[in-house]
Length: 291
Ligand SMILES: Nc1ncnc2c1ncn2[C@@H]1O[C@H](COP(=O)(O)OP(=O)(O)O)[C@@H](O)[C@H]1O
Ligand SMILES: [Mg+2]
Image (cartoon, rainbow, N blue to C red; front, side, top):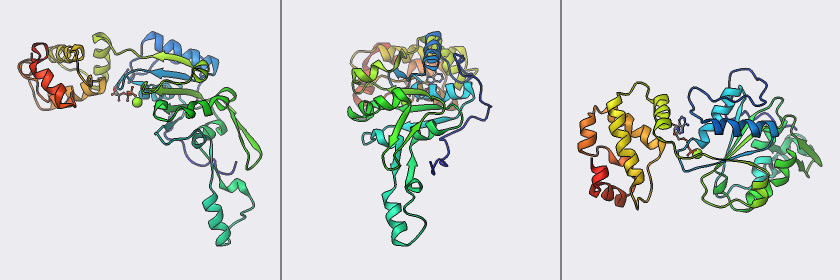
C-alpha cells in the first residue's frame, strides 16, 4: 500500500502491552465491572463491541480510555448521515490521477499511488494492534452496517483497482457506539458483543464528577444532585439532562460562586441543563425541581 502515511487520530504515548483481557479502567474514566468484562470479552474474541446508551453516558470516551489503558493508538471514525462503508476502507483518488496525467507528473500507471486508506484500512495495515472507534454508527443509513459485515468478520477487504486484499496484521479492538437513533440490522448485531451503558446512579455519578471536578464541597454536590435527578425523573421533559451537562453545570456553579442555598432556592444557570423552552418552563413550575 503506498499511502499508509496518514497518522492516527491520536496516539497513546505508552508502549504497547499485551491486550488480552487486561482492560481495568482508567483514572479518568469510571467504568463498572460489567463494562470492563464486556470490553475484555470483545478483546478476547476479536469481535466488535457495540456500546449503546443515551447521549453523555461515556460511550465515545470509553474508546479513548481503552486505548490509553492498553497503551494502544486510537483511530476515530466519526459517522455522519452521508458516510459510506467504503470511506473507512479506502478511497481511489481519481481526481489526483487525472491531474497528474494532465500535468505529466509521476507514474499515473501506478494505481497504488492513488489509493488512500480509510480509518479501518489504516488500522488493518498497522504494525501493531490499535483501538478503532466507529462513533455513532446509527447516524448513517441502514446499508452502512450491512456493507461492513464481511470486512468486520474477516478483518480484511479487497481493493479491486489493485486486485489486492488488505488483511489485518493485528485485529483491531473495535468499539462501535450508537445512540439508538435507528435500529441496527440483526446480521450486524450477531457479529458484535453488546453493552448497554445505563444512566449512572448517584454513587457512580459522584465518582464521574470527582474525575472532572475533584474536591467539590459535599453540600454543593448534594443539592445539585438532588435537583439534577429530580429533573431527570420529571415527566414530559423533551430532553433529559446528561452527565456531561451536569459536569458543565457544576463547573459554572462553582466558578460563578453560587452557594448551595442558592441552588436550592432558585435554579441558577438552568440553561446549562435544559435546552428547550418547554423544559425550562416545566422545571420552573414543578415543586420538585424548583427547590
Ligand atoms: N464513565 C465516565 N467517566 C468519566 N467521565 C464521563 C463518564 N461518562 C461520561 N463522562 C463525561 O461525560 C462527557 C460525555 O461523554 P461521551 O463519551 O461524549 O458520551 P456519549 O458518547 O455517550 O454521548 C465526557 O466527556 C465526560 O466528561
Ligand atoms: Mg458520543
